[in-house]
Image (cartoon, rainbow over all chains, first blue to last red; front, side, top):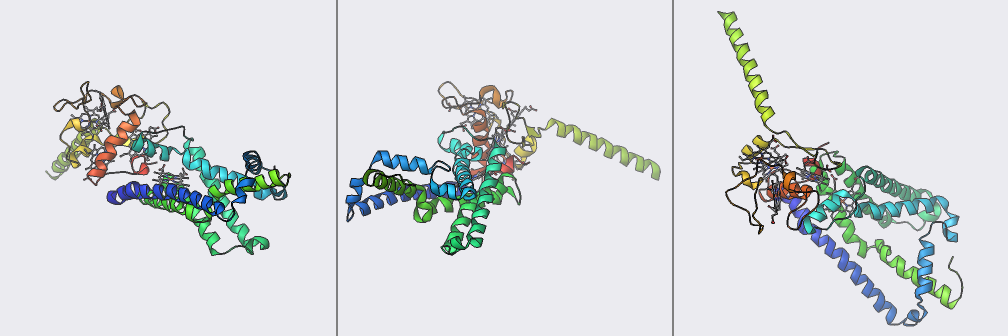
Length: 219
Length: 127
Ligand code: HEM
């Protein structure tokens, strides 16, 4: 068992981090090449000011018309993404391991709060899954891959919660957790989860076109 | 006759129980986490003598080590008269890891290399 733990916490973790970072890097190069070749004119529109304006506005709850039109969805989306990004970065369990490996450490969330935020992420994933089933306009654009992505995202949170609370055997659950976290990290650049990165580019582009070319807000 | 044998057996077992209890009290059972300002995890169960017997650790300095000024481990000296917290502060101090990291590196490195003993958080900090 220690051999499996060591393998998953060691070489496999390295592989996942390398795939994650180099995948993001590749995606960004790919994007620039694509934009630069036939559609070079797109770059002319680019404006830092309008690009940032759009990113900030869309990252502010209820700032845009679309956010105001769907209040419940907006609240859940913002809380979900906040917990999704903040919990793993400021989790004591993760920082302890990073500190042991690289002597790097930073502020951590109290464990009880992290546990609550984990539950919020799991609950939101359930909400998004149900929404995809019951709302006809969403079901129309939903296929199996949407549910697979939701499971990939929820899995590290479910297994992390079970490992921390030591249900169903802490050791195996920790190993399952590390595996599911690695699957998520490796999947981000190569699936639609890459909206984490693409969001900023597409918003910056839309903002630039609306602001610099059409002299309008982007709602 | 029969009665006195029963009495002797009873007395002997009480004595054995008491001796056992006394021995157990000598053996550490939990590693103290008082040195941490505000412990976040349950204290770690660790039966000192039993652990070191089953793991066949004869050299006390594997854990109770002494270093000279250059950071070289002094081979035949040991520091079991001191707590880890006497030398290891809460934060790292150059080569000397902070208290939590000192424990984690000491315990986990050996458990991984000897392929036995706990390695996951929940195994050492059971609720
Ligand atoms: C890449 C390798 C990863 C490793 C080695 C790892 C390791 C761990 C460990 C050791 C714990 C602590 C369990 C405990 O405190 O007993 C933990 C908890 C947790 N991990 Fe990870 N993790 C990884 C990736 C991820 C990812 C990618 C996410 C989410 C995006 C994630 C989310 C969580 C959460 C939410 C918890 C705590 C749940 C709670 O406190 O209720 N982990 N992880």
